[in-house]
Image (cartoon, rainbow, N blue to C red; front, side):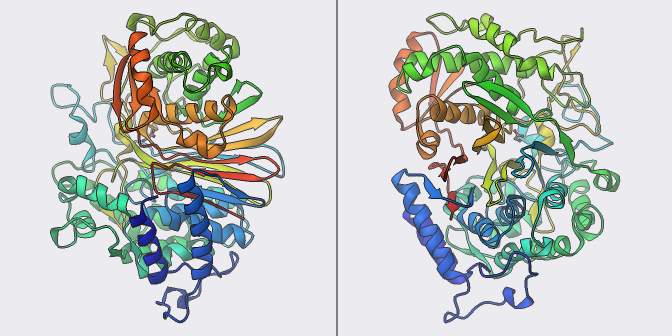
Length: 604
Ligand code: GLY
């Protein structure tokens, strides 16, 4: 943890302590939004005590240990907001709402009200797993050629991203409400207290946010509302600066009062539509009808067997659980434990299993409400065993050997292959509460800063660029093409690992389509190599999706470059900035937060 972040956090704690003593079942009093005097540091002891130990554990590479509850999220202020709810007796669903609302403020580039999310829920009372799909939808007026020029050629990626064209109907507000309706124990309005407090009183800009604003300044400068917020006076926000967001506070107050209806209709909706439809140079077609008709969808969880576990997560339109499950399923017949994390042979197996899984992903995976998909067949053990036998060799698979398979499927139609671009972004929240519930949610506005359009205090997503820009290849349709009302394929992999019907690991990460590799690797490190949850996340990444083996720069992964090259892999060393957050559940809780980012795990 950089000292500058610690300093920024403590500065924030002094300037804007959270409303930690508010009970989770009371509505925030108006006075909670007043600046406390230095003599009355509301919530300060709780904030310092909690974050101090968590930051120390993370710096030392140790997991955080707790008995009753745990939250792990991408920014300490968001984790504290969740901890405040859990400590007061709230459920994991309640805490998730508070965490998401603060993340939308302090990590606005990654997720928020203007985006979408997938949630995996283990219910401590019933023992059931539920997954909720809060993915964005394509507007009713979108056509399959949304991201093509007049000659039918795909647009350049950022020409499509920046502006209104890429904005899908946001799903996150509806997902928050649905999760609270099903599993909440706290008063809805109380979940907004910390986010409103911070939005009004201000928070310290984190080093990561400041660096990303600096990098993206040109794109952020294209739209006045976005430029005013991120580039005040024309200059990028500086690390440690106090940032207030009264427009976001106003939106939060509306949602606290009216629920998600206050987002999908009325003044907030009108602001969203105005931003999208009048975006200079690249307007979009999102309409009031799209917003009004948005629905969260409950879907069957996708589970794959691995060793003694069932690895469960989000099915289509996410490719996450299927692709993680395929990688693990193909490796199930190989003794990775005996090989160990330093073995090039282990990484040959993992890398080529991943390439084969990505070949299936590119052909078959999309929104199964719109295109037929062999969902069950893709993770059927016999199919994965057969695919895994392809790995029984000593060198890297040649490119022509990495073809999609033929999963069991009662359907004759095949799709053309697609490897559309997905750049790193997103945020992950893991929570376990005192009632035995566990929650894994990955949440996004897609690219860093999404479409770069801001409305009502939050950024709007560019999720539609997760669709294939092409509709066909050689006359054969692509499953993940744009269609009105459809949800773009995702790589988000919110995961709960089960053993004997009980959750033992809650995990997920941001990172575009590398999310899949980050999650699969961390599960292998934990399950096969016996690493604790913090060590498993910290273990250097090696990720192979489409042939090139990406090795994490500045880590011991470098030692594997030569042997992997000798096996025939093309190797590339680069930053691999995951944002894994995980909780191991046994007779205690152990929380891990990715050392590559600013998050922490907190528990008691
Ligand atoms: N936009 C990132 C994902 O859905 O995978």
